[in-house]
Image (cartoon, rainbow, N blue to C red):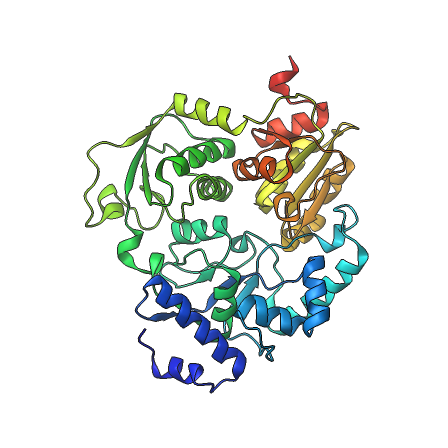
Length: 428
C-alpha cells in the first residue's frame, strides 16, 4: 500500500506505540482487502466499551481498560498506553442500559466496571452517545465525507440517505481509525462501487414505517449485498421510514447502500443511480403479493396470540417516534401480563423527559431504556415466550437469538397488543 509521509511517520512510531500499532493494523487490513492506499477520515462510529463479565475478567487479569483497548481494538497482545483520539468519534450501542441494569438482569459489579470503562473512553475524547443511530443525536456527516462506521443499520443510512461514505467496519478497524484518522480506501469509499446493481420497481403504495420495513426486508433477500435502485415510490419517506427500510435490508441481505430515485442524494434519476453501468432491461417487482409473502416469512415463528413482551426501538426510536408512541399510549394502560420496553438514545430520552413523553409512557406502564436493545443485550422480561415488534430487523434476529416467538406489525398494532395482551390478528 502507498503511504503518505504523515502515514509513514505514524507507522514508524512518531506518535507513540498505540498509533504505530493502529497504523500496522490498518495496513494489514487494507492489504487483505486489496486497497491501494488509505483515506483520511474525521468521523468514526465505534464500540470500545467493556460491558460484559468476560471483559471485566480480562481487564482485571491483563491491566485494565488499556489492555482491553490494546487487545480488542488494536489486535495487540502488548498493552500500550492509549492517547486521546485524533478524530471525532462516537460510541455505538452497548450490551445493557446501566440505568436499567436490574431490569435487564445485570449485576451491580458489571455496572461498576462499565462505569469505570466509560470514564476511560470519554477520557479519550469518545462521545458517550451509545446508540445505533448516531445520525439522530448530532453525528451527521455531509455528502461525500469519508467515515469509518460500525453498525449495519447506521452504515446503510450513512451511505444511502446522507451520501457520506463508509463500509461496515469492525471494532478493530474503527479503533485504529480513531487514533490515526485513516481507513482503507476501498468498497463504498470508491465511486464505482456506489453505482446501482439491481432495479426494483414498487407496484404498491408504501406508506407506513411497517410498509417500509417489509419492502426493505424483501429487497435485502433479493439483492443480498448488492446496490438496489428503487423506483415507483409515491410519497417521500421520513427519517423513521428510511431508518427501518435500511435496517431491514441490511438484516435480510447485508445491503450497505441503496438508491431511491428522486429521493436519495446520488439518484436524481435512474441513469445517475446506475452511472456507467447498464440499466437492467427488466426490474424486479414488489407488489401486494410480495408484501404479503414477506409478512408471512417474518411472522413464521409466531404461533400463539398471547403476548408477553412488546419491544420498540430497533433501530433506536427517534424523538418523532417517541412523540407518536406517547400519542398512542396517552390515557391507556398496558395489560398486566405484558411488559413494554422502548429503546432510544440517552440524548433522546433526556428530551422525552423534558417533553412529557416519558411520563405518558410510564403512566401507561411502559419503560424507556437507552444504550442497548434486546438483541444486543439478550435481555427480555423474565418468562418471555411471545414478543410483538415493529422492527423487521429485530423480528429477524430475536427468535434466533433467544428462541422466542415473534410477531411483526405496525407501531399501532404493537400498542394494541401491549394493551390487550394479545396479537390482534389471532385474537379472533
